[in-house]
Image (cartoon, rainbow, N blue to C red; front, side, top):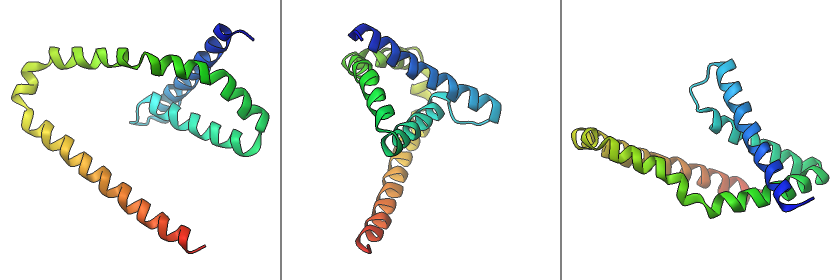
Length: 129
């Protein structure tokens, strides 16, 4: 199979999983974004394929490696909409800078604390074996 066809198949898989995540979000009335749900589904699929089906895991790797390389090589382009949004909302950012900074710092500290706590708990559990 050619490289272009592998990229097309891999991109179709990723778009399909993102669509599936959006569909699950709509049907279950969840507040998480559809692509985040799709990413969780994709991670579960990859883990299950690696655990139970070597052939499926190999096919996923063959088809998703080229598209992932392509997306990572053009990752800078994905930040353009965020940059445009920041420029367009400059007035709001100047007015609401304090709650924004507090939210960013607070969520970072909370994320680090939860991650550290979980790592500490799992490290203890792993040493007990």
